[in-house]
Each structure stands twice: as C-alpha cells, then as structure tokens.
Length: 133
Figure 1 (cartoon, rainbow, N blue to C red):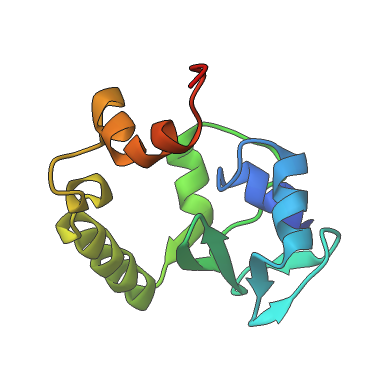
Figure 2: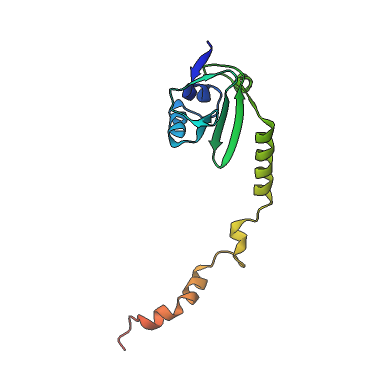
C-alpha cells in the first residue's frame, strides 16, 4: 500500500480519536499537506509533509509509513516523524503557557463574594425599594 486517505491516515496515526473528527478538522482547514489545504479524500504518500493544528499548537510531521488500520500507539508513532522546528515551537509554546500568569490571579482578592457584590450594587437598593414610603 503506497497511499492512504488523509482522514484515515490521521486516525491511524492517532492524531484524532475518530475518523469523523479527523474529517471535521480537515474541513475546517486545520490540516495541510505540503502547505496546501486538502479535502478528506486526498491521498497521502511517504515523504509528504503534514501540518496539523491541534488546539492552538501546530505540529508539522513528515510521513514515514502508510497505514489505514489503527493500532497501538508505539506502532502509530512509527508512521511519522515530527520536524525539529515543530518540536522547538511546541516546546516554546509549552514553556510560555507554563510561565504565563493565571488569569484568575489578576483579580486582587479573587472573585467577589455575594456580600461584595451586594456592596457594589448598593445604589440599586436605594433606587428600587419594596417599602411603601
């Protein structure tokens, strides 16, 4: 077997959990073969360069083997080799995410409590009163 459909190959190489999920990602334009957008039925050959956007992290791999059957992870990893630039970029993004501050810590004292919210909206009680003044 010298070629395989890109959606089947991505599923067999364990980039996506299901073939239909691989097809959806291809249709969204998150998968490129040799720097060109493709359709799910496009054939992949040994030596093709595939760019896969998983989450916000792009991965660039070179096809080393062809398979249409999903097997164990160690076998699936033999189907491709990630490029050095892709590995460096993923490491850089992971380090940046690790060092970035937690967004919830930007609030000085954390999330306001119910009492704090009532105090912030104290003028609301002055304008709208249920009393019979």
